[in-house]
Image (cartoon, rainbow over all chains, first blue to last red):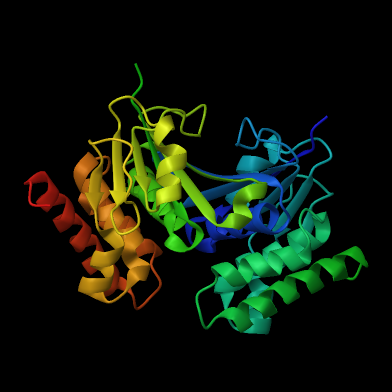
Length: 183
Length: 183
């Protein structure tokens, strides 16, 4: 039976989730040598700014590249959480940005303050997507942290490497604190 | 019968074709209000730097998001041209960067010097993807130029708006010269 792992990254238009999906896909596809499809879909409602990026990772060629029942849902705002939670696989992992998601559909959600931590620790909300990526990969192990860092460094604008490396590290630490029961 | 239009943008890893695909998808999905899926796929061969980005545009919801028989193939290097030409729909449009593609599989290919024009006119090869996008949209009319420019401006790094607008204009002019038989 083929291994197939589906992730959906969701939030609003400006939160950098498409770039996060590309970085995750390149970590898995280019650096970890897996088969990967990375997709974004837009409908006539896209003007509202809802954004959804999907990554499907497999150890064999991928027939259907969209997420069917995501193993992981990252929701960076309340609307994304409300809209996509019910697609999540039974027993799948819901990770939310607690800066913007207050009403949780399950007691099992993992709540981490990606945006407020980026603002507080790095003075740059714009890297909240990278903070979230660091946490997501630490919590799921879907790619190696080494591959994630390599893919990230390959995609970020020149001159922002240091900021992005710190954002990644911040996400890893948030996830580790959660795993140790500290958050 | 639903309208469905498939584009494949191909070349090497550093040529910015994933970003070009996202800009085209956002032009169609966010600004033109169509249904759009934008996909990249990676396999174990991805380390070689081959890059392929696909955009499927429809007037109804898209079941299968990958290109099956592309209506348009953009090939930014010889390998991409050789690899993907045979997937092109019968009567489909092949657009190649003549800077890097010398051997053509058909006499109907549209040859435009995206990279050498970017180098010569703008002193920046890095915007060859945007030059190609301007030409592709002018030749196909797949999205409006107004939507393309809006999507481009929304995605480019701050401070590069002027360069990117010039690159878009250069692509439009290359395509117009071709249409008038000037190239």
